[in-house]
Amino acid sequence: MNENLIAVIIGIVEGVTEYLPVSSTGHMILAGSMLGFEGEKASVFEVFIQLGAILSVLFLYQEKFSRMLKPQQLNVYGNGLSIKHVLAGVVPVMGIAYLLHKPIKEYLFSPYTVIIGLVVGGIFMLFAEKVAKRPVTTDVDKITMQQAFFVGLFQVLALWPGFSRSGSTISGGLLLGLSRGAAAEFSFIIAVPLMAVACIYDLLKVWDTLNIADIQMFSIGFAVAFVVAYISIVWFIKFLNKSTLASFAYYRFVVAAISYYYFFL
Image (tube, rainbow, N blue to C red):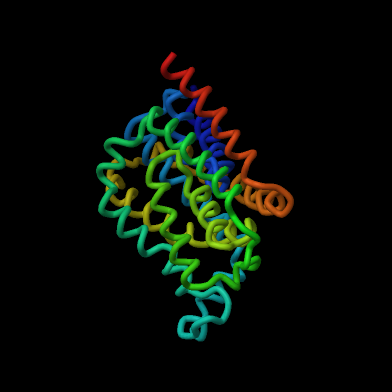
């Protein structure tokens, strides 16, 4: 298949799934396997286009990021969402991810492990919807430091490909008293530094393998991921205002079943 067409397909997959609770990593592993787009170049490409998805969040929430980074916000506690809340949500999982990065990449990036992650993650989402009580925090700017920290810890579950970072954090947020919308917005915001560090870390290790011939393919994938991710986030926030995570859980079960049939039967 033409590389530019592959770039468009994988870019769409990344853009649609990065911030929805369905696991972008899992979908890209499955899509790459189905398209025969695997190996070192595919791994670098998938990391690179995630930067496009990150950029979409910066555009959508530029006002919040700008406010958080103002000098006065860096030193004031409890005045809306702050950089301290973001750090509380990302530093713990960054440390754990750094320690487990090598074994995760070596042993968990396969269709079989993704299928397990899709199913278990879907069950966790249904569990969170069933037991979550009436939310006490409906505005992301009212999130407490304790909530930020524990929502961040739920991201550890997403180190297993297929589990979904947004799925684990939004479900965790529900269990901690956040509304679906507030949990989703906080999930998107803390994804920026977390994903940026992870992407840069991975890219620096393989930078020497890139060449001029890859520029067009990588640029197409980056642009597609940015546009599609932007649209997906806007749609998802509106969806959560009137619905639950259940439909995404059932979708995960269907994808897991189809993938199991495709790869193992």
